[in-house]
Amino acid sequence: MNEADVTGLDTPQQVARVRNRRGEGGRLREDIIDAASALLDETGDERAITLRSVARRIGIAAPSIYRHFPDQPAIMLAVVEREFAALADHLREAAQHAGDDPRERLHALGRAYLRYAQDHPGRYRTMFGGLWMPTLGDNSLTEEQLTGLGAPALRILADALADCAAAGQSTVTDPELDAVTLWISMHGLAHQYAVIRIFPWPAESVADAIIARVAKLTSR
Image (cartoon, rainbow, N blue to C red):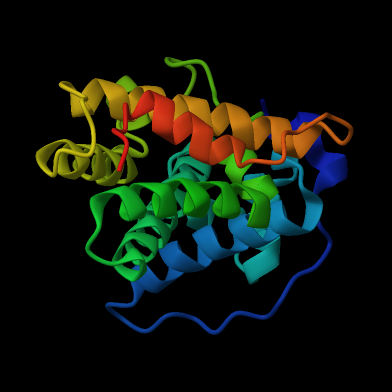
């Protein structure tokens, strides 16, 4: 994607920006990420996030962005990294509030994951590819940067599964693998909730059923 392809999507809004004092360059980087996130929330279209639209949003010249980001995909990566960090914080908070029982913490994580996807549909879609995921080699991104996305959140899930196993509440023997399996299952459910309006959902919680089966939870 190049900027010429999406000029018509640039947002005309521009604000006057106070020049950063010496040593405040990091603030501009955060302002760039904030502007990109705001554009994503407002438009729901990742194509609206270009160097020009972001620069216009915060009142700077587009070339100033290059001091912090080499290209548009690098900005999008920063937005997605921030969102995965927010998801991890959301999951940690849910686990803490669930108490000491490992089974309850695992179910709380599943509910929290679905709630995050429902509360932030645009950002959630972008986190998992959306339209921004570029072809490696055409930009500054590396395979390591992309494959490492979401690792802290996945670690929380794996630790919760390991806790269930240690407490005799689960028969899983590979929490790392089962965490990936459970994540993919919950992701699929979140997607179905988002796109299907008419479906004979069972009265019982589908999320709880997925967790019980994938996590191999034992009877109480």
